[in-house]
Image (cartoon, rainbow over all chains, first blue to last red; front, side):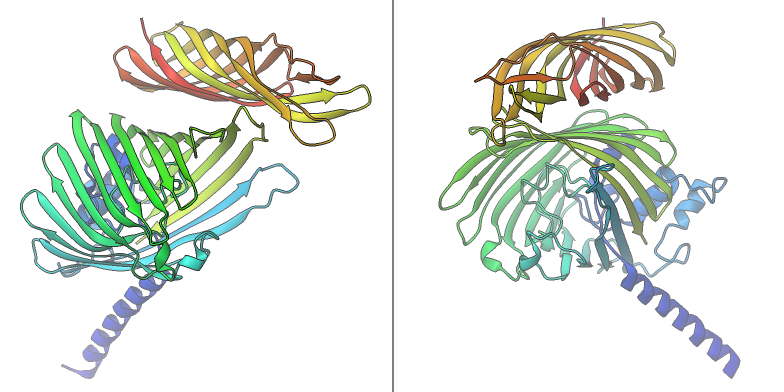
Length: 395
Length: 162
């Protein structure tokens, strides 16, 4: 081989290496879209490596996003199979079967109470994640998920409890039989609907925060029309404050009862070394109505106990997504949370509406206006509004 | 269609003594029955709806220069709206239109303090989303605004189509 050819190959390899490294350094967060039952995808495993949703997309999920979900503004005339073939990490360049890298970024601009004198918009880098799915065998019966995140601006409630660099999803997935999947490592707790908004009332009061992935094991049964998962978790072993980590058991289920309609029950019971205990029981319903149009509902009760007090709260979460055109969706949400239904604490309501736009695969924009009001017989407070603009880049 | 919904809205409250006055907030929440008449069965058209709402109001403040607070105050309200609807899918439609409200209600006086909120007659805009869950059952949600000394009004409930 002459020197010129050798130099060219080296240069190409170097370019590929830099492309991979740059993408890994730039990347962010992975979430689930249970509302995509409106597209006919009721089970998370269809599109995600994690059968309970969230986390990196598998090849099929990337293809669905490219061909079925996104508007594809720059390639409107492209064939769906071509769009799908170009949806890989390096586009149409095929990677070896054993590695599927991913990179993700989510940023949000929030303007509280727009129009008021004190209103000041602030931009948050919500999620910067990178990692890879490593298939140990070609059938992906054994798969290792490595997903690391950087938290640029941690929630003040969490920042003394959190490493800025954290492993979000670090697990071994084993397909034990046709229907049984096992997960061992660090991942999201199995409970309820996993929606994108980590500030929603079906995630925050339950202490299922953006950065509270837990080490543990999950057994997931995946039948034709039903799913059940049991999760034993021991808290985040990388936490800088291990005594506050919740350890316990959770359960979730999902059963198809009508076409594009699934109902499920979830439960979680956990306690920290500081004797802060959380018990959750919830029921959910996912209903696809038309192509890209769906309704999600979850209701549950939350019991929290510590050494001095106990509260019994409840929450409701309702989201609708309506496909306006390919890639364009109108979304609404209505959420309610009461910290303690036996006391005089207010019903906290959030009502919102917005747009979800996928101009092409790898890019998502969200615009949302949220109205918040406390309803109580003990006090009346001012309403609050917030405008949010979100960008999500997933490579 | 007959629609049973929970409604909630806020009003600006004014608390008055002989010498001074203070601005506060009031909240109205209640169950309503709405009768909706559709003028078209096509993909777009007009809906006309009248509703009767019965519930409880809370208003005032427990701190400040004038302390006035009242809760569990029963009220009745009547609304009428004319909305232009667009059916996006056979099971989904959006509608928007003007909303009129009549709410005859007087806040009780307390220790020489009088309170008023909003307006007996109010008007605004509403944006409604209807999702058909079953051939005769709709999930109904709406968000809108009342323009006279009031603010956001929203509702959610279920409708039965005859």
